[in-house]
Image 1 (spheres, helix red, strand yellow):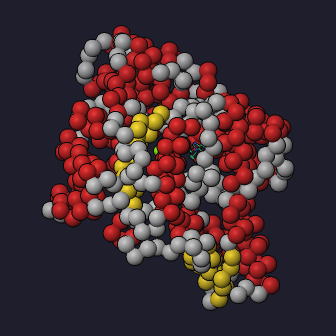
Image 2: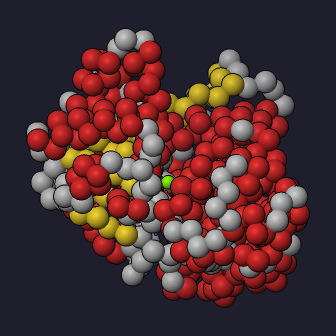
Length: 433
Ligand code: ADP
Ligand code: MG
């Protein structure tokens, strides 16, 4: 039990945490309790596994620094689950299922853009394997696919704690498969995936052009489907539009329900901004929420970014969040300028950067020196403008949307693994914006 004194210290520490790390601060931090503070160890009690994991992954340093600032001593911080679920014994078999505590149905705002996707996810979480199987969600980046997948798992875990759930990105699936082959442990791999109750795989467009992984995935799919186990998949485009995906997989993905998520409308954006602010312990006035929703249109991740900037600006200056502060904070941020960028401007900057001609980009030439700039144009156009894949393809020699999509995925992956590409993209984006 915390004495009055340690409880006060903990309140100060929490206040300091909020100042040091507004991005990761959540409204439920106020429910954390201090379990003990002895021998330089601050033990913090949290309600369940997900919150403990979240704190461990994101906030350990911040809590450590805050505790040291407040007490003036070296402190190490430990997060302990007090009530609710602790890790179940079969967790090792599942691999670590890291579910994000923010990504629940309660925290998901429903609007016309995502109503079907949301309703089908709720149905699946209530009776896995019995309603829509497989459930396939698709939509462009930052529109809530990953959030909904986590929400299904969070809910299913609450409702049927004994269910074995596997949640992973398609990239992880592919990497695990490759490593199982290399180590000669294919059987173990197959057991791990073919015996679960719910298999959730995020971003399956990553399977494109990976023939062997597609083959393995196909068999995993069949094994689970035939045993009436639930499959949930997400991708950035509809099954038929994922480049180089085998026809037999495309057709299986369509067996159950395919639900599209669209970009949120103005009203939905306002509701999301408010929800996100509330989650971070900030109450926003109607006019501020409207102002953010007007400025930031592209996707929801950017809405959150805008909120972070506003919150951090207010914290740093010690001022209240007013409309003026919000607009000034966002004014210097590039989210508002993005809407005016045209494909022509992008092509202009890219051709100069790589010293190639527009005619080359539009030609059928496929040498690396031409293909790369062409694909980078497509990627940047996808991210910096609101044009469709088809329109982007139209500007670059009448290429079809699958070619553009393929280019976007390729550059996206390159930027994740290759520092030089990342730098090029940053430089280009800077020149364009
Ligand atoms: P995707 O997987 O489609 O790229 P994410 O699920 O990662 O997108 O969503 C990006 C961010 O936007 C997440 O922080 C998520 O919580 C938030 N988000 C997306 N849609 C909604 C929604 N309808 N309500 C609340 N938050 C949302
Ligand atoms: Mg995602």
